[in-house]
Image (cartoon, rainbow, N blue to C red; front, side):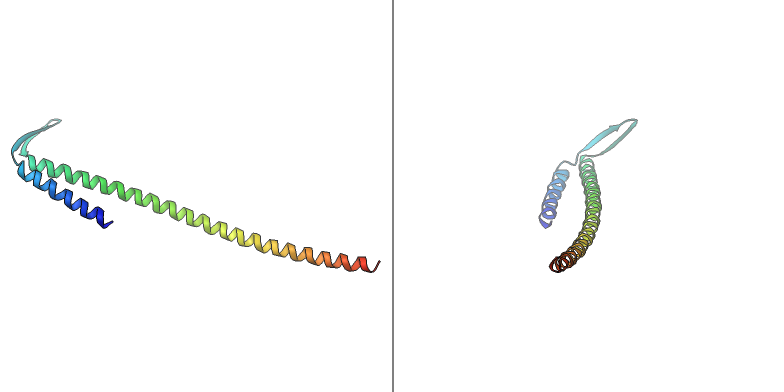
Length: 111
């Protein structure tokens, strides 16, 4: 995780240097709007928008993964409970079978 932070910081420094070196004035047209601004403002704004959008997508993915993990943990707990119940039932049936086998064996000896 720390390597991503370092790489992002290095990238941000390069973007800032590029923006400062290209600080000329331009006219920006968007739909019906038109305004004069610095190329540096456009570059930094685009980089900030990209970082925010990327961060939001990462947060959404993290939430999805946490919900999926919680669901899987719940299912694992239910399956463990079912396994314990099944093992208990198996032991009970084996006990009954052992009791039935010893009772039938005693009956045959008397015949």
